[in-house]
Image (cartoon, rainbow, N blue to C red; front, top):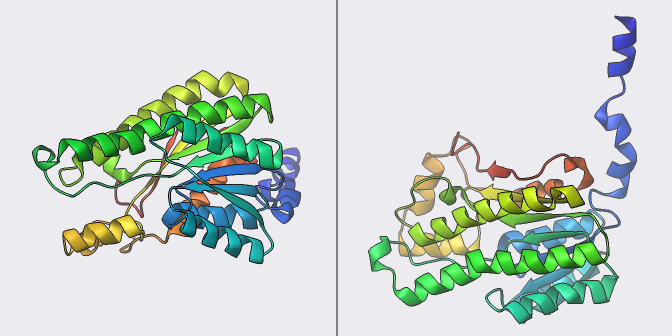
Length: 273
């Protein structure tokens, strides 16, 4: 009994105290898509504070530049690259830029996405279907393909997190194509986790619930009362701040999640409980 007590007195906090001091992502190079605003921008700020060298990618350079300068002003290491997630060459060039700048790639957060006009699936124009599919499903596939190649060639081992949505976990009558694309990302992530786990590359999904992003505000403007209705279905009774989602992604990318791969982590205030 005494031996057991002595063993259990060595806590995880004791074992990871030096890592805590150094920062959750200290020594890692991180690539982030959709980093100009919302969850991606929050992640860029957080990852840099946690010690990572970060490359921000998105379509709007002005937003990227603003976040990059903010990180640098706070003492972090960051740069940015314009990237269209629907264009394979653009995605490859963006990932390659991380290696050119920092010499390696350790972790990636594939957060970039586009929304759809809310409403029944039969009312969605085909052009909108194609855009949502290209950015929200093909985009993460393109990104993972490039990131896995970069991790293999440099760091050797690493981690990837894709952003999905709790809207992918059940029927989604208001955002049916968005939800379907995100469900496809869940499946793609699980397949990647099984495929690349033997190489030491972990792949996970973070599935946010109601989160105060520009996309949510736009949905609420088009369908007034949406946020209030979603909060009423959430046990914590509120929407998430983007940084709360970024915190979950940071943990999944860190070495503290070293035995976690192939999971869809809900960060939803209990909405799907």
